[in-house]
Length: 466
Ligand SMILES: [Mn+2]
Picture (cartoon, protein in one colour):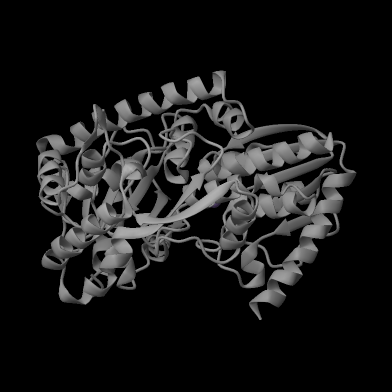
């Protein structure tokens, strides 16, 4: 059943293949996040290899209405399905959309000059089964470019497609296998603690935030825990990272975390605990150990650091293989990003800026860049009440009116069956905005003065749900 659907989608990829092969002049518009930049890198590498002239631009969703189709072929990646493209469908440019977001248009829209490829049209979920970068990789694969599969893995991780059960699944898993078969990627079952290659272990542990534990935001407690478990924190003079640990040491941490969590969470959550603390990590085998590029999750943070400070080109060049200047730039952007986050975290934590409502908690992030409000919300969750979602608000931008809303919550709430992406979409629509996303990480754009109403409706919607 599912296979036949994938088969039909494959036929559409053959059509897309033909469109690309015939083109001499291509414009790519891709989204500004890790998934979108990865999608752009896969397309750009593909066109380079085919010797096809192309330009690439990274845009936010609200910019689409101002674009003009001036090239023979225009490709939209990681966006386009959720936007009105009528202007393009009547232009002289051929249009190819490779997106995984819920589509506005039905399957047989348009004519032979307008091709939209979206997994939802084939009954395939676009939140956990395939990313925007994954869709572009499926196109690259029709040209035999299997070596780009690692970027497809990175895009899925960047898009948090493994966020629910800690594994890549569906079409993502197929892309992963392409990478594994070519010895580009390794899939390692590990503790799901961020910072496997670059963070000292006790620091990495202190960021455990799905449930507030004694070790959460407390490095001393982490060191005490490691001492108790007889796990050395140093290797000679160097701090050990998660990637330095033996399997046996990881098992000891796993058991200890299970024990700590079982004491903190309500009984109905206990069965979900293992999914919180173990999962598959993806390693890029061509990258050096201890490099932030070695681990897919850390690499995606570095890409996001570039994207969120409007340096998409830097990330694009690194993805396309530059390990010189572009990588240096990426490193400094990552440091800048980290400083920015730390500063804003301190600001939110001061003066009790988190307000508790019955079913949710929120903070006003006035002045926080809208590109990072979700990251800040995710980090601040560990200082609030993990049993409720946290919502952050900030201005969309200085030029544009309206409010950007981001929500993050403990994965335990998602395991309990709550899908905040669906809830935020409905609530946003009720106040005249739009929204959506994953169960544990989602967002919305709402009108300037609708914050109070949005909070009231959201809080009411969660009555009896939380
Ligand atoms: Mn995406």
